[in-house]
Figure (cartoon, rainbow, N blue to C red):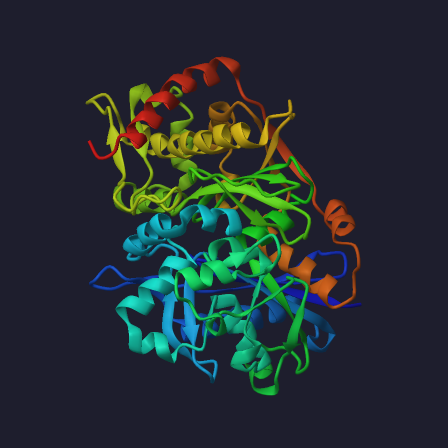
Length: 493
């Protein structure tokens, strides 16, 4: 019997799972993922702290599984995607993880869009936003001494995998599921683009090598193996971005499948057999773990985090089950109350000046109206994405079924709200470990223990409850959606 470890290094927490050959989850471990904010509004995470917390999570998952570490064949990590960090030639951090929630690089976003915005979209699949390219330019312009010391720009999951393997800086890597966020890659041809790197003055030697998620990047060394609680020599796969891992782990592996990742970010996805280029910046194309599959998508940064914020600030004595029970008694549309969910600016399409707000509230509105309006706001934003996908990709009379995953998928009320607003079927998954499951799939394939990723996934994933849109409710929401769209498009007022 062989075993695999999948690790998800997320924004709000770290989770590790030990899986058997049939991908049953045998043990789980958790660690902290602490997002910090400085006085100058820098939003960052400490790489060494992430390393320590990840080792705690992995060690705990092995102990709780009762699996002999010698039986673990491979380990794979996913991680946050749009931010960057920089390492020196000794694989030590020069800068902390510049989080995807950090919007300091708004000037660089505008600069890249004006200088070569269409070229960036054509090559990467996405317009410049609060992601790698503008962030790298920000560090080059605002911290030139640190920039000079950076040997490679990488992501947290790569930092941790590299530490575990004892990699040298020239071995730094990025798997292809991150390439759309880079600003400098030819995503279709899987290489760094000469035009883009030259246009923005970025040295190619500071960029890591591009690899498949199924690449074995090394073996765990003695020192770090002891720290992580695994045997020395355990195979380490390249892994992928957290969004790509969740989509793989939920079975979105064929074209024309819909997905809603209801996590810290709220992500809406349609899988396609080709990249879709949107020069308006409403949606973007990203590579799947599976080479010939693409994801057409967009997201609200912190969409799910808005719920935590509301509960902590306004409903401390209530849990989410209580809140959802009450909002289910409120009429769809919240009696005209509309919420804008972009509390920290809109990440995509990028607008750092857009802010959250409630519009149309009156004395009749209760705490639960305000909470339900947050749930509905995500559906309205998804409606914008869905309309644009249909314009560019063509509906093709698809019988859409959106698979909902992430922590928010457990909210039956929320699933029904989004199904009603979008007018499409929603369906949840009969397991809540999809991100780490995706990494277990990758570890199994990369190690040679399994050979057919599509066969594995289709036989492991089981679908759960179905949420059918109600026509009368959808019609009511359509009117409110038009109002929401107008509010967002005309900000500031």
